[in-house]
Length: 387
Image (cartoon, rainbow, N blue to C red; front, side):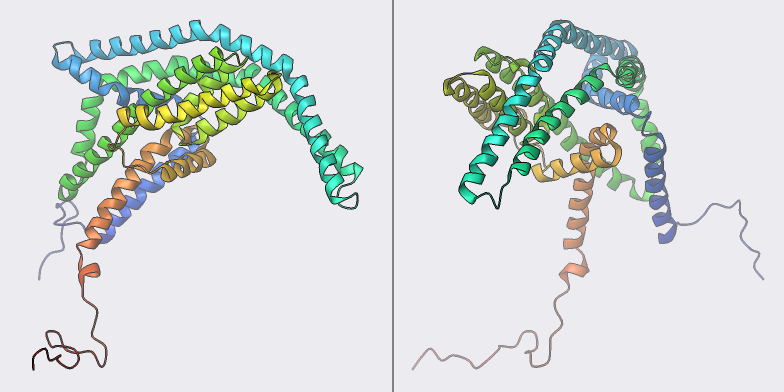
């Protein structure tokens, strides 16, 4: 009679159910962490992004003879200096343009209200009073003004909100500190996670992780350079044609271009509406429209091929969906995590699709039905070709 196995003896092999349970447990734990701690994870996720972005530079400095800790500190200080320089140079201009926007907002409200009333009056003249009455015209005009007034109130609350100021200060203090430690210990963290991989699937997981890293690094670094280039171009060009809020609109349009088509379309619509309200003739409006047309040509034929090219295997529709889905689920934290999650899911889907196309599930031939000829026998009567 054999003795029962001791609970202290090593397991000879993991069952399929145990592997599935482990994967499901990791996914559930990640989801619970995001649900419970989403309000405090933003600085840490931003710090991880900074460390991931700067890791190649830190590795090069380390290979050049500079200690990893010194390289991490130098890069974090350089990044803070760039952010501070940006704030010192552009913050007064941005605040001044926000003041111009708030002071002119009543004028814009009246313009929109007048345009809405004129449009309803034109519809009333064409369709007749039985379709469009005076009450509807007054309602539309009042709602148009109320919508812009709500936007102005929300803008004032966002700018003066103590909670928003607390979040900004938290990002400014916590993110650099956590980013320094993550950047300093990045190789050790990667090695430690690698040591936790199941031995049976370690090579496969490493291969997929390298593919995710290739796509994600190309997208992040390339998209960052594209956004900066477009923001500088739009801000300079719109300011040069004389648009009063050209700096804010140009910077916003450039930085929002990480969402495909959203930044350019939003910026063009906003700039053209502001140009219609500011310029007395259509020449200024045409110049503003020309800035965005030339910007689209520059983006499509110069900037994107130069910085992104064919290295990124993330479709624009998939990026847009992931950004909106992440934002709907976890707010700004979800937006930060959207592209890494989209890149990972895309790599895994391609891997599983490749496995499926090589599996018997796909390669098994169809079963012959009744009346089909056996394999290898000709179907139908032979065709005579000679006399």
